[in-house]
Image (tube, rainbow, N blue to C red; front, side, top):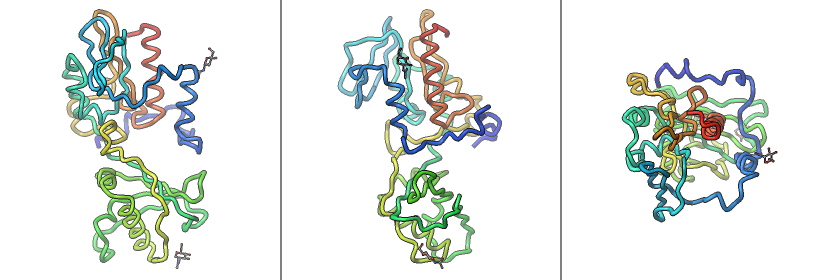
Length: 283
Ligand SMILES: *[C@@H]1O[C@H](CO)[C@@H](O)[C@H](O)[C@H]1NC(C)=O
Ligand SMILES: *[C@@H]1O[C@H](CO)[C@@H](O)[C@H](O)[C@H]1NC(C)=O
């Protein structure tokens, strides 16, 4: 990571507010913001393979073929990981070199989450955080997978769940493992760390394999050293494509927010920003 992240990432006045999901989950947010949208306008399971903005109207190609309906403008909310893989085939004409360099060099995919479900908590009641501190040579027989785990928190609204944070190369490594392999690996590290072989295995692992999902390609954008050196920024991805004085292709998503990138709140705010931009003709 570039040190610029420490300077740039800024939740502003909301720093003291807890921006974490409660037991209602993300679906409650989607249900709320789509209240006034008729169901037939929402097309699920329709992967976009090309956005052609060369003409007066924008044409969309789905996996199932070119769509007859055309659009005055589109807002693209694909993840940075998806853009990294598909930006060169997704747009006709090609995106600007500035945008492509930002997409190529900004970082993505180095943080992940894992939810471990137990029949009952095995950690003590007042536990806030469990940190794994591997010291080379300190434990014998510790497999390489021990290094995949760093931090765990009991979940505030479910006593039986530990939320694990993954970082660096761990998200991709864990995504490549089966649930049983993850259960064995994580239980092994707890047992070795706490010198207690009776710590139970989780009954279930809840996770999304974001790094291996082609629609996401990971989670959490960040300013890499290469991006900092190239002057690449999230704002460059956010800049709308304007043709003949009309915004045709607009960009939203966490990797387009200059201050609260990485977050759902950043993604949400950026979506409103682009909707407002279109609505107010402000580009
Ligand atoms: C839905 O439309 C009503 C009436 O215009 C409005 O008051 C309400 O805020 C809208 N809800 C959302 C979530 O946009
Ligand atoms: C080992 O873990 C079990 C299961 O959580 C717990 O009941 C027991 O007290 C632990 N033993 C020690 C010595 O901490």
